[in-house]
Length: 102
Image (cartoon, rainbow, N blue to C red; front, top):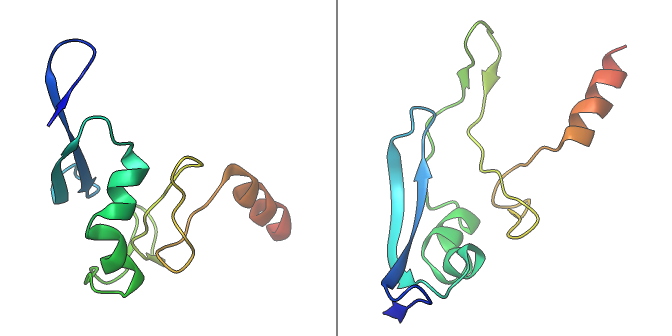
């Protein structure tokens, strides 16, 4: 257990939620001194994503749209999601695709 600078013991909860903010996966108990990326890289979620061991629901249409959209994980620069784990989009990608449609 990690004793932080505020005088408390701290642990990290790394979770995955669905579109309704319901937890679908959680890793609880890493020392509070660990970064989110360290917990992700050292925990069971990353290998499960890499070897496709997680069964995602089938693609579904978004509200007010009839095109099916796959489930994805998004990462940030501190702990990016690798292409084989999922897709990620950026603002620049959105602008490029909007220009292509013109």
